[in-house]
Length: 608
Image (cartoon, rainbow, N blue to C red; front, side):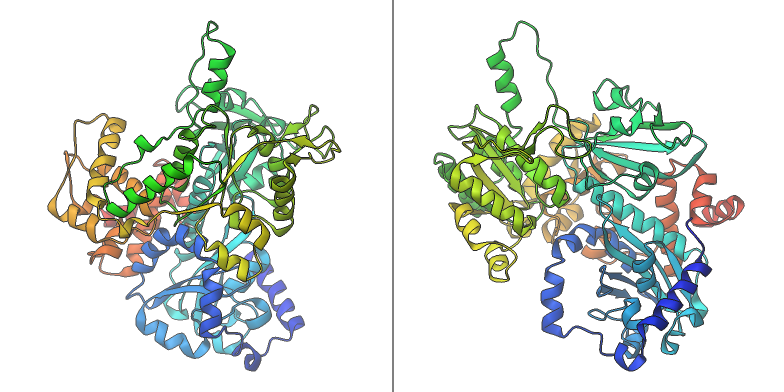
C-alpha cells in the first residue's frame, strides 16, 4: 500500500488550508435540481454499467445507520442510498446527491481525498477538516476505467461511533469488482489474461489484449504491475516474455504459464487465460483457396436469422433494417446498452452487397484519444515510440470495400470527428506521419446509446458529421418495452443448456413473473447473464426466483436479509466476493480484508 493513511491525511489538511476551505462557502457547493439532472445524464452510460453492483450494496444499508455514495472525479455525488433516517440526518451537512465533496469544497473527507490521492482510505470523526463533518466516518475507494482514468469514488459513510473495522476492505473489494466488470464490458471480443506473482496472490491482475496482442485495457493491479501507459499502443509481448502461447490460442485450458517482466523484473509471474471473448478462428486447410480464406476472415458472426424476436414493434425494426441493408446509405443505430446494436449492424452488413468484404468494428468509447487516432487512421513506421517497423493499417483502411462499424460514436473527440468527416467527404485516408492519401470505399454504420442530436445541440458532436451519419436511423427498443421477454428467455436458455451440458431448463411460475415484471436496465445482455447465473446455480432442471442474482431480487421484489444486521449482510457479501477472487484461498482473502485468518474462519462459521 502506497504511503499511509496518516501521511495522506496530513497532506490533505495542508491542501485544505491552502484552498481556504470555509463552511459558509462549502454549503453552496451544490448543483441545482435542473443542473444536476443534466449533469447526471452525461454520466448515464457509466451509471448503467455499475448499477447492478451498486444497488446490491445499497440494499444492505437500508437499516444500518449508514449510506453508500457514488461520486464522480469532480467530487459531485451522483448516487446516495441507504438508511433513510441517516440520509435525512445528513441533509443538514449536504451529504446528498448534487453536492460537491471535493477537497476544494469541503476539505479533508474520504471522497475528496481519495480523488486527490487515488488511493482507498478512511476518514474518521475529527480527521475531517470541517467541524460540521466530525459526526461522520467515511470509507472510500477509487474506481478506475480500463485505461487507468479515475471515473468514480465509492464511499460508505455513517455515524462515527458506528464505524465497522472491515468496512474499508469491503468497499475496496467492491470497487475493484466494478473495475473488473468495466474491463470485461469495455473489451468485448478481447482476450483477458490473469496475472499474479507466484509468491503473493492478492488482487488478481487482469489484462485485455486485442487479436494482435495489443493491450487495450487493464485493471488497477495490472496497471501497477506492468507500469502500462495507455497513451502509447504496445504489445503485451513487449512487456512480458512467455505470454505468446496464451495470445496465440495454443494454451492449455486453465493452465498457468510462467512469465517474466522484460524491464524492472519482479521475479516469476504466473499468467493464465481468464476469459477469451475473441471470435472463433476456424482452421483453414492448405487446399483451400485464397478467396475462400478471405471470405472466412471477412465473415460476421450474426445474420438476421440469428436475431430472435416475436414482438411486433421489434420485428418491424428488423424489417426496416433489412430494407436499409439493400442500400449503401450510412446507418445510425441507436438504443440502450445491451439491446443488440452490434448484432443488428453485423446482420445489415451480411445482408448487404458488401457481405463478402470486411466488417471492421471499433468502439470509440473504449480507448484513449491517442490510441483511437492510430486505430482509426493507421500509422507509418516510426510514427511514435512502440510503432511497428512496417507501419500499421487503420480500421478505415482495413474496411475498404466493406463496412466500418463505429460503436459509441458519441464518445469520439471533436478533433477526431473533423478528421472522420474529411475521410467521408474525400474518400481518402492519410496515416499518422504519412503524406500519401489512400483511396477508401467504406460504408459507415455508427451506433450510440445517447441522443446524438441532443449531443449536437449541446456542442459535443458536430452537426455536419451527424448529417453524414444520419442516412438511415434504426432505433432498437429496450427489453422492458418488448412483449416477448419470456419467449426470449426460453430461447436463450436453449443455448445456455448446451454450454452447461444439461438436457433442458424450465422456468417456475415465479421466475416467469420475475422475467415479465423486472425492468432489465441492462437489456438482453443483462437477461442473458442473469439466466446463465441462474442455470449454473440450480441443482435441478427448474429455475426458480431465488436462483437469480441477488441484485435482481432486491430490485424486483423484497429480499430476506442474510442476517439481522444489514452491515453484516454487506460483510457477508464482501467475504463471498473476496473468496471468489482468491479461488477459496482463506489466508489470501483474510489479507485482502485486513483481518486474521482465524477471525475470517470464525466469521464464516457464523454465516454458514
